[in-house]
Length: 349
Image 1 (cartoon, rainbow, N blue to C red):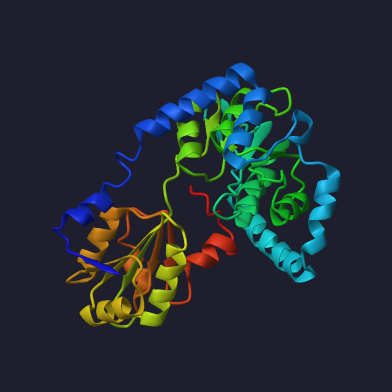
Image 2 (image 1 turned 60 degrees about the vertical axis):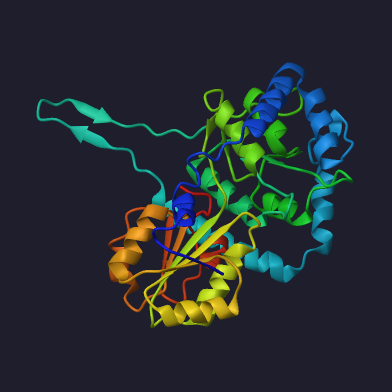
């Protein structure tokens, strides 16, 4: 673990990390892919699938077949399916409670104003599978769309070199009754869904995480198609004090560090805890704050995607937080629980 000072340039770079995150070579490469898919449809999609995923497919093979979905269950245990159904219930329950209620106002003069909320027709869900298949992203993106009443859900995920999709992704998508699944990844998947091809339908909105090429494609295509957001690398800040368990802090920082480009930062008011954590892990960054208010100020400046408050007074500290995507309170609320099973989607907001 690297120790940072509040006046150091490294901390400021972390605070500014996403302001100039776009890379010129990525921008140009993605623009060429988008133009090619727009002009040449399936042929371009198949070309980039061969180039980047090493999979030789025909246009007919882009859509996953019923036989492939059935075969996916062969190596999946009943325990996995049982656990998955429990998680699906958690996520579904949360989004049913969050579902928007139409506003209605009646003025004294008798005028009635009503809001009518309608679901989108077709949503594209992107599921990465390069470094690791993000199985949890399937239910974290599909379930909110299902609860909202989206009529057609199209899932896109890159194939392996043999043209196959991860069986767990297929099983989860099938359990959630995803309408169509396509073997396509990267910027070419986003472009295909934005414009539509002979094989892949045009969608109204694209959601889901992805690498820098996927994110850049979403940025360039916003306007042709709606998107959820421009996601950056995963982030975690842990606020801790002398009452925090160093083993728990280390476990959660290291879990975050499993993301190859993830950011894990400990902000603590305890020099002793900082020393203990540094002895136990080489991952992430550590920052010493003189008091909780200073720790809060640093955290608000960092504006992390995930924030764990592992102090003895977590609820009161949380009231001071102004900039964080998801907040986890106490020693028994790890970010991993929220990312996988608690209920709210890990695709923020």
